[in-house]
Length: 489
Image 1: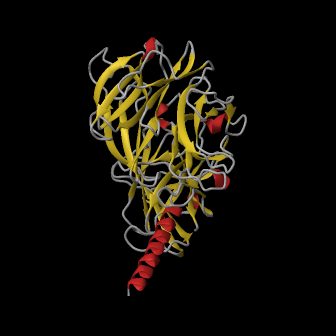
Image 2 (image 1 turned 45 degrees about the vertical axis):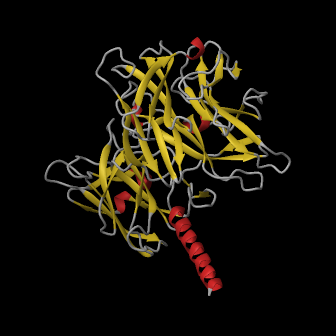
Image 3 (image 1 turned 90 degrees about the vertical axis):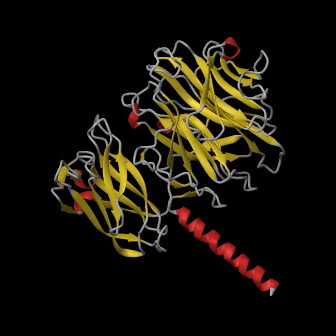
């Protein structure tokens, strides 16, 4: 009896694992696209870091919805790295002129780590004037990871030196370090005091004389059969302002060095796929074959002319033989977070042209010079008061087996054009299900075709599925829909 019970429990565990893996396999990260969070707005956490508590990831970064001046430090949570819940602002702009958090101030690259001794979450950030003349760091603390608000403790220059882009790193032994770009001298690794609130001592653990900003440091256990122990990987960007460049990395077995020569890790000349390093996230263990399973590069694709539209380039990193790091570009991929498996390539997909859908409520075909399907799109989605244009795409194929509530989840990619500088919104529904609010950031300045990703439920096995894109609850005009990309598997 006990043997049968154990066998049953073992089989149940396998079935549940397969179900989880199957559900996650359709949830994709779409680098460079508009990414709608739970509040119906584009994910706004730039220069971000991630802290993980059990199976939940917390993304903490800058709110750029009103440009470069400080507005807020936002927190989001997710269990799969694809669907992000907006938790709120951890720091917000004050009305006091001259205050670190006041009008026309700069707060960038907030990073949070947990102090096991004080039981506090500690945030460090770059604090500056609008002309970047202050060059300081700021510190804030909270009793909870998304505590609203954090207690702000003030700003200073670490070791009396200028500090602009920063990173934060907590080692296995509990010691923590500030990575700080000292423009006059180079990139520093500075040890923190046991409470993580200030710099320990009067010297840096290491000083790189090379001009490197946007630093991100990670420590990984050796995955090579020829070596043992752990290795540090430090990533960063050259100094080219808002413009991207070929970002670089270096490795060492000790924080004080020696460090290897800086090398690029993305395709040469790609400018790191038009992005800048923000954070490196390890969310899986080594696979024993010389490769790390789940290590993700997290970068920002800045649009300096309209920072609100800046997007995210999150891609899997490959690390071979401990010292060889490579990053390849992908239109989409599956992170498989918390699944027990490795990240994966996206499943087979099929595209459906927007202009071939069925129009209603005043929606109609429009010309679009850079759209697919002969330069046409479905336009006049949504509208002014009293009208709601929509397009229905029928005959959508899927092999999904919708198991009811919570089943049949998949990531849709909607190719679109939005000639405004600000976002437009639309409602997206599948097979008559509840509509979801989806954001579409502006693509003004050349009529470029953007992509917006949304996780939907309700796709059924077969080719009888319908997807409707319509206006969102009085939000005005939606985007022109070039097409919808749907995973077939």
